Amino acid sequence: MNEIDASDYYKSVGFVFQSHTLFSHLSVLRNITLILEKVHKVPKKQAEEKALKLLRHFDLQDHIHKTAVQLSGGQSQRVSNVRSLALYPKVLFLDEPTSALDPILTQEVLNTILKLREGDMDFVIVTHEILFAKKAADYIIFMVEGDIVEHGDISILDNSQAEALKGYLSNVFLW
Image 1 (spheres, rainbow, N blue to C red):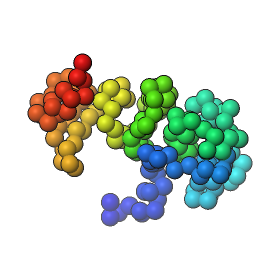
Image 2 (tube, helix red, strand yellow):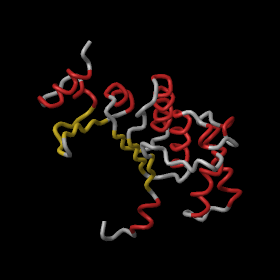
Image 3 (spheres, rainbow, N blue to C red):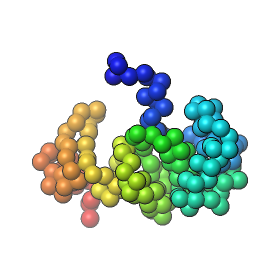
Image 4 (cartoon, rainbow, N blue to C red):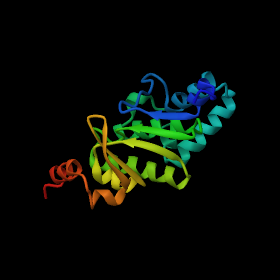
């Protein structure tokens, strides 16, 4: 890390925060293009082309002129994903991408993440939703109070060796 320019590295990482962090007074399109233009110095026309291409890819083209406050929770989450993807990051970090979403909106976000996987995007997802993790992840790291308790491919969710993970799963899947 000492040999890497920190500012270049930070520009190669995408983040989607739990609270979506869209600018509420800006349109969906401007929420995406603003970062491209101001931080990454992408010309306005090129920024709009990138944004529109991604919005179409994720079935959000009907919302480009809406402001962030006019979007549902799932739409906001998906626009946040698109905004991060517009930077073409090497890795995308998603913090609780389905928190406070109903099952239908959760499925929308999962579909978006599955599209990311098709494009060979590397990403890290922080979630408490085990079924979501099981569908979206290749590799699981289960942590308790900041410590790694167990890690491995998704099969650890069915065959856990750690008592902490077994206990968590038994409380999640009470039925």
